[in-house]
Image (cartoon, rainbow, N blue to C red; front, side, top):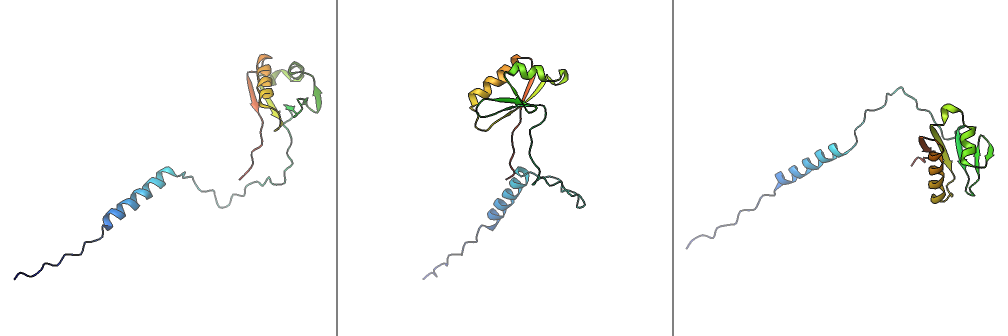
Length: 129
């Protein structure tokens, strides 16, 4: 009678697991944003309690469509362009109210471009997360 051969216990495929972990490490190193750390003696400016104001050379458009520049009401885009200094007419800053309809914002942008503004910049609020 032949002795029954015992089945060898299978080894766990640890090499495959190590390869997968290594590939994941390389992937996250490449995909992640790596930046230089800030100097330890650098103190950043805090703006938590800074009062927000519109830039002085921006056309402020309220939710009801009313336009103001430098604290004064403006009847039209042409009136605003005429009030701008000559050197600031190429780049115009537009500060729309959050509730202003998008259609009106596009119309104002077209009117500003038609009145001679080469660039129209929208001034917005950026909230820190």
